[in-house]
Length: 171
Image 1 (tube, rainbow, N blue to C red):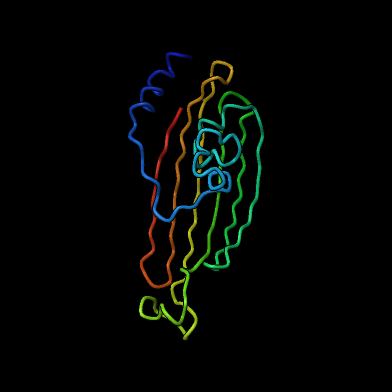
Image 2: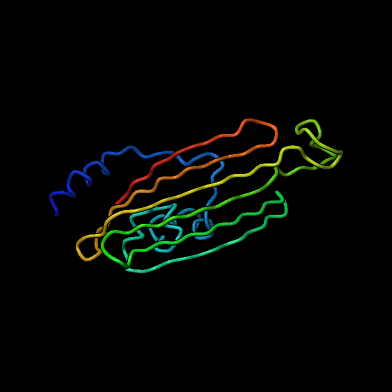
């Protein structure tokens, strides 16, 4: 069994680091810890930040969150589920959507943004993010390896939509 894991471990160590997808967004633990939540993300934020941390504890996780930011008129809804208790293999999924528009001040920003009326922007945006994370914990959960595949779909009212795919791996 251990010999079968050696090629996977070597691949994870040699895989290049990927850049964060533009206009991506984080769960509260990463924001509250100034971005240092990658190492300590033993909750559902590990699906996005560090998939291997999900295997450190045997647990079932589920969650739902909603956030609102008045400046951007932003709504963010996120739902997640993960299982690292059933066995040494673990798997988790997340779906998030953020609906927003850029901050806009009609008295100063009319030259920068197209508007429908004098105080309403045409540039409304929606970002969908799907994460699927999985991995394997061994040596009684002292070491775990994991990977996250992420699809980010950005939808815009006045410009071309974008789709991005990233893959992160860690130990």
